[in-house]
Length: 230
Image (cartoon, rainbow, N blue to C red; front, side, top):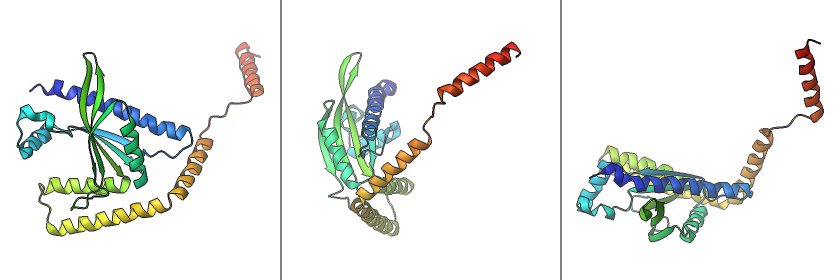
């Protein structure tokens, strides 16, 4: 298996999508609007993770295209409502072909995991023509992402067999995260207004102020005289 060639289109797709999605966030900010995208990250599965998943799915290396999450984009949002705004943005894109959606927010997993997943083909333009690259989008709030990161670490530590006591604590933590998201949604307008005020203040504080033209002229005259020895 030529892994270098295999991974190349996935890496290119991730690079393009990250740049584009971060650009969308900047467009919202430039217009003074609340951006549903807080930040964007991406990853390619390691070879060992891909082989493990093939084994769990009972697939051969020749069926590797059935692994839908080799390339993953994670989009973090401030509010639950933002997640569904991002979903609509993705559905409207001409360069994406949606294959499957999974709403683990309305229908959370037994573990307490919450997120919105989209499997889609990204239309990647290459020197050999257009290539369809499967990408998994995971769209979450910051609270959901924190919980999922902790669960992932524990699953890795216990090789998927998390002790029952810790599982129960995780479920309680998931409920607490859901409550937090609900509280933030109820005051989202206040939060958005406060953030706009804060960002404007920061912008004003770090704005570069051009010196008056008269001061520039005086300084230039001084330097000329000093150079001449006057």
